Amino acid sequence: MAHGKEHPNSDHSDMVIASPADGQILQYESASGKWKNVPLVVADQPMAKMYKAAAQSIGNSSWVLQQFDSGLYDTGSLIGTNRFDITEDGVYIIMAGQGFESHGTGRRLGLISLNGGTLAQHRMRAENSLPDYTQWIIAAEHKLVDEDYIEFKMWQNSGANLNSASGVAGQWATIRRVGDG
Image (cartoon, rainbow, N blue to C red; front, side, top):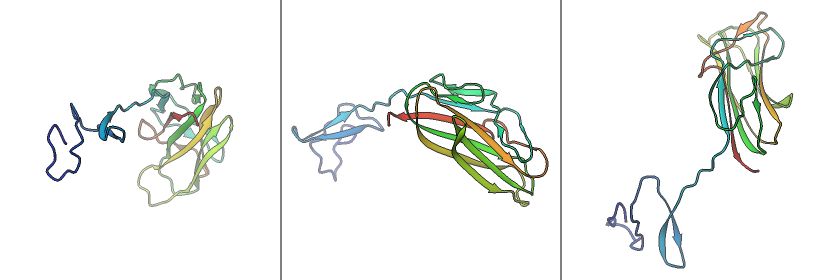
């Protein structure tokens, strides 16, 4: 039955839903032989996103901590000074958008750092053919505990300082707790 009417090709005459809605979840109950509504419960999980509004100068051949100056949202008091401070044990998905201005020499690296060590890393070679910024997304899923912290770093060896990408679509980081683990 769809929207109070039985579909002509349906073999589910046992399906009676009082007020159907898009995205509704149904579960078959074998004891009654009927389909029933299942409420969709999305747990309130801590999540945050921060970004760098203006470009950041990244020195040649040294790891540089990304400097974030703006937050888009923070539902769990996760945004610290240029990092995420974990306040609740659990499994988290962590992602960062990183990039550099166009420059044809050297390599570009980015990493997600857990408590000062490396959690995930991205490497790429610079290409002369790129007309604009060289950008990538780096991601990790990891079990974290209260008082862990996540930072983001960049490295390049073009022979001179390079500016990072900037703005909410250029240099950003996000985190979301997805479960207990």
